[in-house]
Image 1: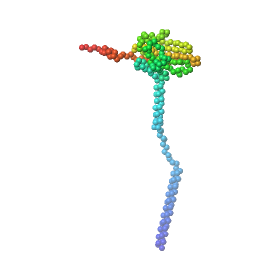
Image 2: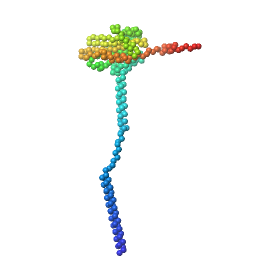
Image 3: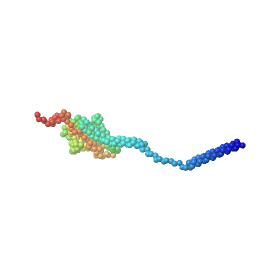
Image 4: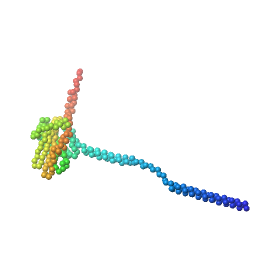
Amino acid sequence: MKTNTTRNLILIGTLTAMVTTVACSKSSKSKSTEVTSVAALKPASFIVRPQAPKSVAFTAEAAPTKVAEKAAVSKQSSQLKPVEFKSRDYGVSFEYPWQYTRYNAKAIANDYSLQPQSDGLDSQITLVRVEVPKGFYPGTDLDSAYFTLSLNPDLSEKECKATLSKDAKPQVKTVNGADFNWVETDNGGHGSSAKIRNYVTFADNTCYEIETGVRTKNDGLSREVDPDQVMKRLSSMIETVKLAPETKPQKQQLLSSKDAQPETGK
């Protein structure tokens, strides 16, 4: 009898424990489900952070552009600068626009049409000729507009000035410290004309000769160019002519410096 009672108590205890476990399990699941449901209903919170500006990438892209712009400006400005002709042997120089055409002494010597008017002596040397392109005056009767620089070391100062035409009264133009005597002559016929200016100056025992000319050839179709307007382009080159200061031979310089030393008493 006692044994049966003990078994019944054990059975009742076991059943009570099972009911309690099931109840706890259901309660935990319910709470878990509730928490999950609340979490699902609660809106998620986000941290919004402003995007940092890509300053490094911008600088890296902008730098080459600025360098390219500077290079282009530098190239363009270099093209706009005038070109300089300089003869170290004869101490004379001048500047002209880079678009003009230049002929050297050899080309001039081999082509008679490029040579200036002769001063009457074989010792005349033409160093350079510069021409204004005809494209500057499209549709006109311009045949040529030129500037030539020559010299003659065998002429005296009087003979140098005498090379100018006697048909016009000489005028004087001072260019960078040098006085040039010059005359202008006009000639033409048979649809052609020429306006010529000849300049001469004497320095360092040398006669320097410059000739500028505007020649036209009318074919009956082209409009007439204004020679005076073209001559202004050539005259602007005259303004840049520079003659090197006269230099004495080295031997003469040494003698002069020796003579200039004061005598010392004995």
